[in-house]
Amino acid sequence: MMTVNGKIDPALKLNNRERMIRTILGQDVDRLPLIPWGPWGETLQLWREDGYPGRWEKYPDINTDFEAYFGLDTGFSQIAVNLGYYPAFEHKVLEDRGRTQLVQNGNGAVLEIIPNHSTIPKIVSSAVSGWESWEKLKERLDPRSPERYPDWQAELQRFADSGAAVQIGAFPWGLFGTLRDMMGVEDVLVNFYDEPELIHDMMDYLTDFWLTIYEEAARHMQIDHIHIWEDMSGRHGPLISPDMFREFMTPNYKKIVAFARDRNIPVVSVDTDGNMDVMMTVLSEAGINLVMPFEVQADCDVVTIKKQYPHICLYGGIDKRALAVDKAAIDAELDRIDPLLRRSGYIPSQDHLVHPQISFDNFTYFVKQLKIRLGMDG
Image (cartoon, rainbow, N blue to C red; front, side, top):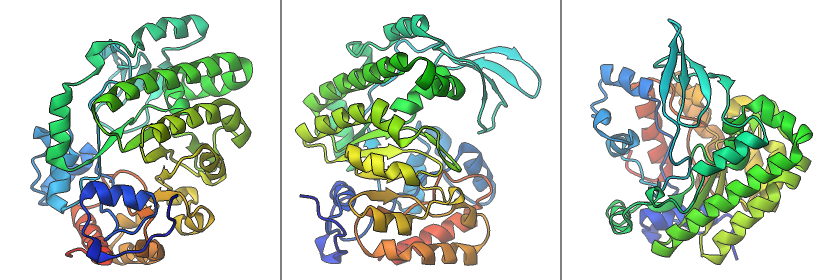
């Protein structure tokens, strides 16, 4: 039975993995984890000009050096399996238009992008336009491909060395989220009505595809966390209704949760930007126990949501815009979420990646103040 609103007990002295899992399950912990989301690449480039000494370009994952410099917790680390296309589509520039480029990405979509900018690209065409292209795409979604899997002994050693909790599933893999990438957001929304059987088939196939990969991983190591990335909400609410979620997605979510339960995997999480207030009920019904990131500019209030869903761990909910203002704004924002820092069941973080308007000095101050409030060295 899950404990809700566990206490903070500094005498427990937990390791990273124990702290992560117990926090999410609402059990007693020594303190909350310190794993705020990391920066955009452009942010780090600007920070280096302001004194950030990180040599991040030498790392495949830029957060490695980021975590070490700021003294953050390790949190979760992803198992090195390929959950996408094999072989991937060739990433190539199709046309240089001056300020923009037309590119094909690894998902088979043709996009118009602004090079070297973390902006949302314009989708020109997508990998799936109907049944025929979907059936063709399945050829790249064979879970039995040996190239998908790592050297398991090396992977076990990596986790033993890092002390990270073990995660499988990551951006950009989810049900709505992946279909959006496969079809484009407008087409996927239209097809919920025009081609519902296609949507069902895609979601059902992807669920079974991922669970087959998860099963192979579970044969070799204990998984702690299954992550589902969706981004199915906008600023004013979800892109699909709760009833549509229940029809198309809940059966597959319950299949994933049942898989986790049968293999003693304690955490199943969902990441969706935007206002997700009305989706919290269906996520709770489906058995999800960790949700993120609760964007404040989309009117998400983690203090209120936690009262409504005390059994779900919330991750995020600190207004990233405050971090771009000044120290007083940071203090005020930490005061706002302070009630959640006093018990288990919450992971404090800004509500998205660190954007370039957040200065090195402001983020350093934010981390220092958060450490003080968590009972860590300031």
